[in-house]
Image 1 (cartoon, rainbow, N blue to C red):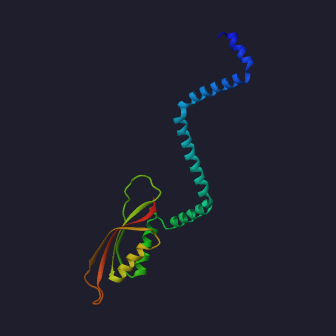
Image 2 (image 1 turned 90 degrees about the horizontal axis):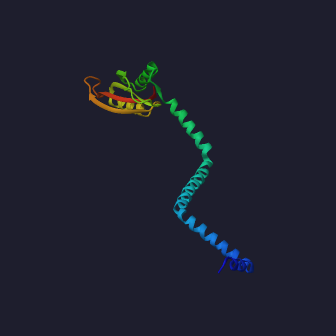
Length: 184
């Protein structure tokens, strides 16, 4: 079979030849693309995960303005409950107010130096507090301290029985090591 015979057959059946040529081109293209199947599968999975993430974000964003407003209100409330490390007089006045409200005797109150650590927006400001009074009043002081205006973490609490006081009331001394949440 010579090239003249091949050209004669092509001219005799041009549609069949065009179909054969298209089949050969498609087969070559499929063979070439078959090496990329794994890579294309990974790309597809990555795009699917990204689309699912976008869909989830859109679905969860419906209540976003209300949630942001709620967070801002909570942050504002929290900021109102913080103590400032540099405002020693205001901070100590809190303890004196608790002393007067609970009818206990404040023996000692000291703001301790805060350990210098990493810069943080909120820190625990350490205090040592010693109060004395009847058991009921000391426990009321402790409860007011825990549930009071400022956020408090009590590290240690030591109760000791004191000498003196009324015959019917037991006088105790409470020594506290605590931290109030504040800003440096």
